[in-house]
Length: 536
Picture 1 (cartoon, one colour):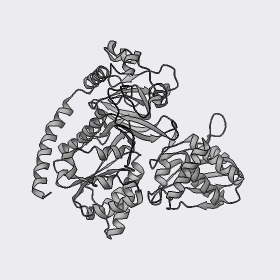
Picture 2 (cartoon, rainbow, N blue to C red):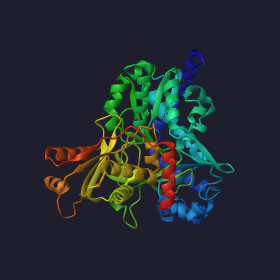
Picture 3 (cartoon, helix red, strand yellow):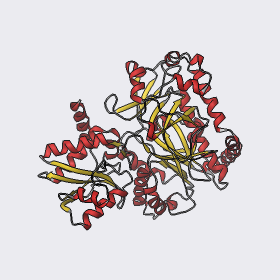
Picture 4 (cartoon, helix red, strand yellow):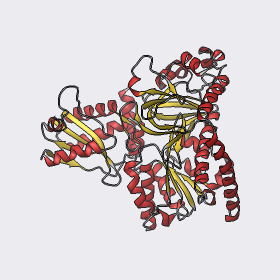
């Protein structure tokens, strides 16, 4: 497409963005949420879920909360979806669900199957468009459609599992469902986006994208950094702004951005390139960066009704269910969604804190269950405990205490396990390798990040002397009582503190294995699948 048609499309989009953004900013989020729930309930009243919960009789938010209990994914799966997988016809949402987004979990092996309806496809598309419109309206110098928008997705291949039903990564669904009018303005082409070999795909991204006038690039921060490094190595350039002189926005999400911020500014090479945060998950597109405050702004009009449960009430049999009309700024909430894909009063496992409610601005604060996810790997304590125990068992070792966290002092970042043994393994390297392999076998997201070429190195192992953790906890004033050695530090600050204590106190053992950049090969990937199958 020549520059002149691009100019006209960009001009038209900007005019539309100004009008639509003004309407969005002027709308009442509380009223919009009230109307959203009413529409969702009315639309799903004849589904099996709607009949079971008396949707015909629901006239208010209070009645909805009384009729529909909060459910985890596992509860919804067991109550409605499991026996009908993979065909969900009129179960929780009208019609047949065309897509199932796979995410890491414990149900059905190692994955969850999140329904994605046609309405949810439109919701995700419209929310992404809203984010771009607000950027254009707030920054007159933004001209995204005079070049190409580049989304760095993950494994995008989809599997056809039933007539009219496909399943796979959410980025694969997005690649298939790109609006036809938008395709001339996006990169990569659909065939490349659906490439399943990540290393080959990244090489092609790095090779072909340098020929394109990229104006916006989006993805998980760790993957974006990997792409940037590969491009700069290939081109000999010193910054991404030299490669893509029209670059205006970097859209990031999936993990906390703070550890990556300095590296991005260093590699991009221009302060005019804006960093825009998003909060999107398989259940829906929840929020996006507010141009004025840089906080996340709740997507209040996209077919999702939000509820918020105080985190300290999660274990209560009847926790307080807030919604946008009565959330309190500064309080940590677990987020609950009812969506246009039939996820009703669904506890998605994330926590947020509002800084303001008019407009609704918030920050992502973490997970309801403690996780290690500095790079998008979503490891939970149970998986880490089991992997450490198995590695110890298979090497004849006995573990007294351990801690893990991310290290960002080198590129790419890596996990550091600090382990105190009662009986050390014969070969520390084999302990580390078995630990790595066990994690890959237990968790799909970790394995996806460790496949050769994706960028997460093997973990590093620091063996420490006897009594190290006891001395460290005493030094922190946390020895005894209800205090426990923290297993996970997703931000890495506590891990660095512990490592510094180990070095200053002379308690470091003889073995410290730096993370290797080499990931699993395809044959090892297959072996990991076989391992998981054999473990039941």
